[in-house]
Image (cartoon, rainbow, N blue to C red):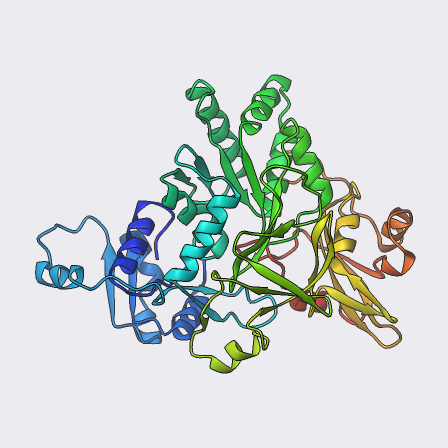
Length: 459
């Protein structure tokens, strides 16, 4: 466990060189989640920096942890015998386990997905080719380092090609703009930051911070700096079309690149680096990835797919079909020209309403066009007549206390349905609406929709 930076990178590389399996733990997680992670992944040793020692002080009593060792400025003559013994370990083979990443837990308890050195290498090879990674790239890294998005897409790809990584201890929209603009100006506008990867919520916050700036000259500087980013990737959650369009406007026409992936498979689909990017679509299969649709569900096969869930052989077997394709559980539609479109998780994002199957993501995108909505989440709410009705949890917008704008008043259910009349079929409009200060999300910006249903009470 370490904050983003050199200590984290050194620890991960050292663990792999020793032939061990890395299990990145998030410093932001409470003790209960850390305990679950350590038990589920069968962790035996925890590495931790001194500044996070208090966070894991009790783990030795709660979990099967053999030792606590610190990543710090320990004198080189300390524990020499132990160090020599470790560095003489044989190098791992491609099929050896390398990395455990936990599933998001949006549809059940997080499971420990094990990737091999081979599956990680395949993911890196695919992404560096598809996204044109090179040694001259500079990425501003603000993602959690315990998920595929932050570890593989944003850090390991950069490391593989010798690109420069600037880590942010914590994402801040105002700080992001300051770093990007300063880098643009201090390098005489020749070698600015070139890549950013974020979740949709980050882009919303960046847009809010931009719109809050009163100086037209400063906004022009911000737009000029952001327009030098050759690649802005959005993932881990669906990108609302209005947000994507606004980002393109303030970056002088730069389009977000949307992609699709999962903990177990890495990245599978991506919009093209060059060519048409259709908002709301996630493109086509990445190099080396094979996909198929079975009853609307996306299934994926390729060298980047994981080896299985730690200690759960039945769950592992159940997530593959007879041809070895991973069952993503995501409902997808396909058009040869437009590419693949993710309709949502079959279990939580497909709402069964009076014989119709509705996409929660489609409804969310339409709701976000309302000026009084900053963010929202749509889910199915049990109903005796229709089976499920459309429920919408929304937070006011478009401003917020962190950017200085005055928020528009959130719409009532009746007002929202009136607004959506020309945008959605009437049976897709939310039947019930709950207004909250902020839609609850995990560290990757994902919403646990099963937990949202309780917000509607007996409605």
